[in-house]
Amino acid sequence: MRGGNPFRPSFGTSPRVVAGRADLLDEFDIALDEGPGSPMRSILLSGARGMGKTVLLNELEERARVRGWHVLRLPEGPGLMSELERTVLPARLTEHDPTSQRRRITGGSISAVGSVSTDTSEAYPTTPSVATMLQRLAEIARSHGTGVLLTLDEVQAAPIEDVARLASAYQHLLRDESEIAFVGAGLPTGIAALLGQQGSTFLRRAERVDLAPLRREEVLDAAVRTVREAGRVISAEAGERLADVVHGYPYLLQLVGYQAWRAAGDDEVITLADVEATLPVVVDRMSRLVHTPALRQVPQGQLDYLRAMAQDDGPSSTGEVAARLGVSKQHGNVVRGRLIDRELIVPAGHGLVDMALPYLREHLRRG
Image 1 (cartoon, rainbow, N blue to C red):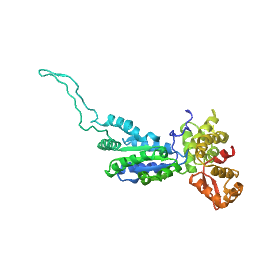
Image 2: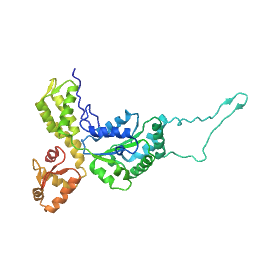
Image 3: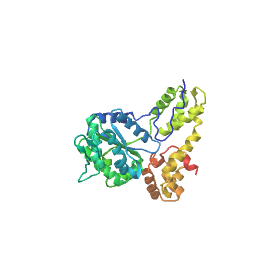
Image 4: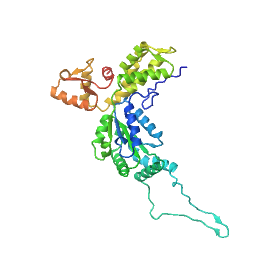
């Protein structure tokens, strides 16, 4: 029986079938089982928008949960440490620490003795630090044969002072061989900038995983399985065309699949025409949700270089781009290098460059 549309083209929403990434998931499983000291217990996921960072983060969290680990999603942005200290950790410890409940007698009576009222105060009251609370949570987890996983999405948005404080707490736990792990995810340029600042040492020591586009066979397998499990089939030629349109991007796999499923209406088979019908939506959605944010902080000179490249239907000659802009080859090469660092373009052979993001050319041509 056919169900509803099985594809989920929302950023951060886990698909029904996760394409690729099996090796990383398996390595993380091994790391959790191996114990303290395993290098894959500290991971930094890096990738462009639409490359599936948040989805992969969700999958890694689930791998920890099924083992009984405590999973703490660290607050994103400027409130990271304050929320962790005031809300996230106290709430988790209140729930799981058997010593967190303190009985305070404020009044009562004892027969034959009379009424008594007692109170207790500490001469040197203290507020538990993040490090202290994390250590306690790790001790509780270890007593049950599990551990604590910290995850942080949009790493590049974290204030460096918060990163430094988190690093200090985390490194103390590592030195004590606590059952602790960390997985962060973010955009390449933001992560590079963060890693260049003092206080981010523990991130530099994490295993850096740069998420590459999915292989063609991974896209095809995920599409076929998703469609089949929902009660339909996709024709061979439609599957091949879907893989062309997707360009290896997990987000596009979900978007193209979703739109093709809708285009098929009540038909049992998703056809080539159904996949072709998705292209206008794909270009528009990528333009709004991926390209516009990616270009927001790009200087005008680099935007001009990209627009000059967009005149070509394929890879561009760096010499011809410089000529179109009326600049020297040397100046053009400087701009080219900066765009490569931003991962907006990629080398495509001797003297050639190409767009790094699918449909970026179409976006630039639209103005």
